[in-house]
Amino acid sequence: MTVDLLVFGAHPDDVEIGAGGILAAHSVLGYSCGIVDLTAGEMASNGTVEERQLEAAEAAKILKCALRRCLHLPDAHLFVNSESLYEVIAALRSLRPRIVLAPFFRDDRHPDHSTCGELVRRAAYLSGLKRLPVDGEPFRPQKLYFYLLSTEQPPDIIVDVSAVHKQKEEAIRAHRTQFFHHSRDKAQTLVNDPFFLHYIRSRDSYFGSLIGVQWGEGLLVNERPAVSDLIKWSGE
Ligand SMILES: [Zn+2]
Image (cartoon, rainbow, N blue to C red; front, side, top):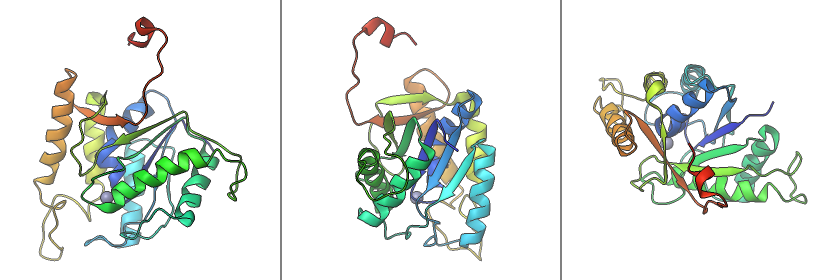
């Protein structure tokens, strides 16, 4: 099975927060979309790995993704090394996505997020080397973009996700061991503070306002666009 759009995250809820709207919007457009989580999120303060896997599967269904895989790399111990790179490259070579998204590769509060971005950035290039000892035919995605988690980079592109923001919120809510309600039997974290939804909404609404729509998700582009016809390129 191959996909048009593949979104990588370090933990089973990253993709929903940073690019859940983009996934849902592109599923609606008829593209096949997939998610790869590098870790099972076993270091989270709340929720077991089994609970989190069920929640992640439910969220992927809400976003109408064709697949969701977990690479089971070690949570809180993500490093740029050959073992992790080869796992990411194997996923790229088997799923052969046209477009890949990953968390921005610098300055995130959670080091796993930046490391995930750096791993995917390197893997997207190295995956094209035919002598690399990884299963599958050499492959490079057409484009790699970076989404935003706990970092405040200004985005280069904003995707209009107004029509699907409801699904994005629903997919985040599906991670019920993680988000939005403090309770006595749960460790209190930033993300299970009920106010956390407002953080997500405020950023998405701000990005939306920058392009004149209700909700937007921002992406960073790490290469210059190659343009030969400014009129066509500006056509949308
Ligand atoms: Zn995370």
